[in-house]
Image (cartoon, rainbow, N blue to C red; front, top):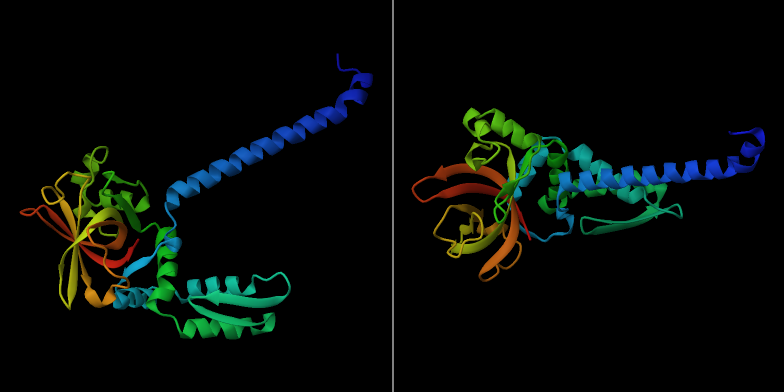
Length: 255
């Protein structure tokens, strides 16, 4: 059927169709890969407002865990990304210019002035890559399945047995990133307290809630009046069964 004359006429078209099909498959695979990465990583907090930051906790974690290498890599990448051979970078609120030979000096400058607001993004990136953040959506009543959640369930057989239905947040020892609708319920010169209900009840004070106590000096923006949506990065402290309140120690809050 496929004679030499037939191949002589149709082989260019067959090659074109093969290349087109291969390109379509590659695009589908790339789209699927980006979709999976998007679902794993969730919302990028880089473009959120850092509403609260516990400076000491951030810097202690940064210095204890050796994040300097990650910070150096990020600064080097930003300062070396140039089309015309020059460097013009603006990182962490500072700017510097010069040739590529000055990269090491620029990087050293940024490392010397590393502050909590400078390194929180690097800390978040590393925590995500290490899979030590459990993502909790109080409004939707869901917990994302990842390695951090699997470890939490493995350490508590009772939670693991009912993992298909519920997850007890009190059992999570890794970091939690809790999305909720928060409201201020108390404030003093030392501390400010926020509450966020489980779900979206008509009466937020009637059911289970998450309580976050922040150092007032760590608030970086004016506290909104009423309810506001935010994401709180922190550690679960305790569950108060009498009041149906989960206590969370916050490292950072993003809006």
